[in-house]
Amino acid sequence: MKIEIIKCLQDNYSYLIIDETNNTACVIDPSEAKPILKFLENNKIVLRYILNTHHHYDHVGGNIELKKKYNCEIIGFKGDKKRIPEIDTLVDDDQIWKKDNFEAKIFHVPGHTTGHIAFYFFKEKKIFTGDTLFSLGCGKLFEGTYEQMFNSLKKIKELPKETEIYCGHEYTLQNSNFCISQDPDNIRLKEKILEIKKKLADNLPSIPSLLGDELKCNIFLKAKDLKSFSKLRDLKDNF
Ligand code: ZN
Ligand code: FE
Image 1 (cartoon, helix red, strand yellow):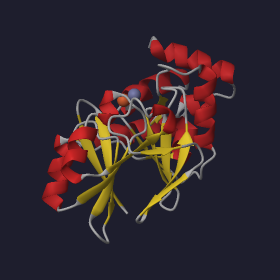
Image 2 (cartoon, protein in one colour):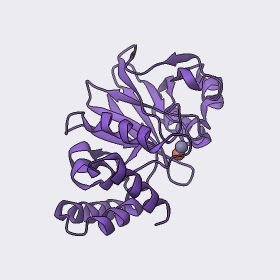
Image 3 (cartoon, protein in one colour):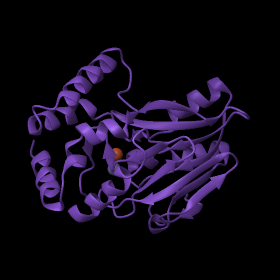
Image 4 (tube, helix red, strand yellow):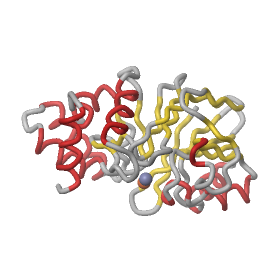
C-alpha cells in the first residue's frame, strides 16, 4: 500500500491509501473533492472507499462529490450515522474493517467529537488519527470530556512505537511551540523542531510522525494523569 498525502483547504490533509496491485484506493477524510479528483485522474486510480474519522465539514466536505463520481462506499462510526453525509457502512469500536486488500482496526476515540474514530492499518503499522492525536498536539474538546480524550490517547499510546501517525491537520510547528514551552530541556524535541522546520521550508508535510517520537516529545502523551492532561489542554486553549 502506498500513501499519498493530499493537501486540502487551509491546513488539512486527506490521505489516499493506494493498492498498487490494481490501482484502487481508499481516501481518509476528504476535506474537499477537487485536489483528490485531480490526483486520482492524473494517476488513473479508482476510488473505492471513503473513510471518515468524524463528521466535521473539513473531514467530510468531499464525500458527496466523490461518491457521485466513483460510486464509492462511505464508512464511518455507527453513532455518526445522521451526521456523516451519504454514509453507507457503520463501524464500531474494536471492529476490523476489511474490503479488498484494505484492512484496518477501528478505534473509537471520543473527545474532539463524541463519534470520533481512528483507522489503524495494522499490517502497515499506520494509524489515521483525524483530529484526536496531532503531531505534538491533540484535538480540542468540542463535544467530549477531558477523561474521554485522555483515554482515547491512551489507546493510541499502546501501539508499537514504530507506528506512523497520519493526522488531519498540519499543526505541527504551532504545536511544537507549546510543547517546548512546557518541556524546555527536551533534547529530542529540539531536534524534532529542526527537522519539522526543514520539511516545511522545503514545502513538505511534517507528517507522518513516528509514535515513538510522539511519546518522547508530545506533551499531551507525556501527561501522567488525567489532572495534568486537563491542565495542559486548558493552557493550550489559551496559548
Ligand atoms: Zn474536527
Ligand atoms: Fe479538522
